[in-house]
Amino acid sequence: MSDGAIPPGSAAETSAGSAAQTSPEAGSASETSPEADNAAGDRGPDPSATEIARRGAAAMWADDAASRGLGMRLDQVAPGRARLQMVVTAEMVNGHAIAHGGFVATLADSAFAFACNTYGEVTVAAGFDIVFLNAARLGDELVAEAVERSRRGRSGVYDVTVRRAGEGASAEVVAEFRGRSRSLGRPILPA
Image (cartoon, rainbow, N blue to C red; front, side, top):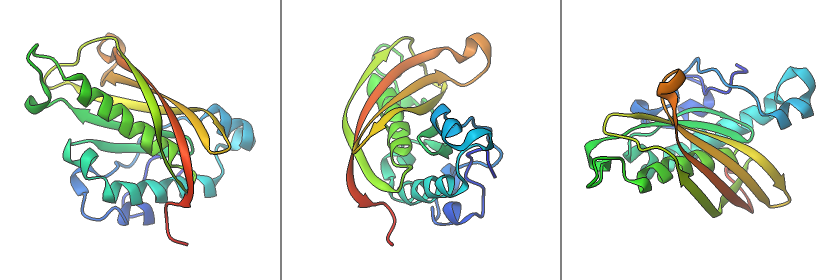
């Protein structure tokens, strides 16, 4: 499957354990990153690179109680890319009747984490910045799409756009996030 979704029943999805309610969905469309397209010509990303990304994401998802506990869903993963979704619940709304920015930042940070860990090495955040552009409200389904912008040595830069799910004007941008990553130089999966 070349669309970046983690298919049900695959080795990657199976290793995610019992997180069925939040497991990645099949059939999600995904674009490959420009960097991956350039590296692989018109064929898309290297299948082995895609498999490394999927297996690493499944292993991380299995241990990511924070993202699963907030009701996030990991929809897509590919080298340098990830997409997660989350519905704003009553527990996420602040005193102004809008989603607390910390929850929006957490969704973006989770998408960033999955995108920067797609190369098989444990990679952590060195820092991030976020700009809130529009308020999210109770019941909004938010979609965070992370894209690698640069990766050199052990450092990387990733951009995440958080929007309301939907088409056209209903899919307005809620926040823009820029994450800086640092690889720890050890594998995500045991050898």
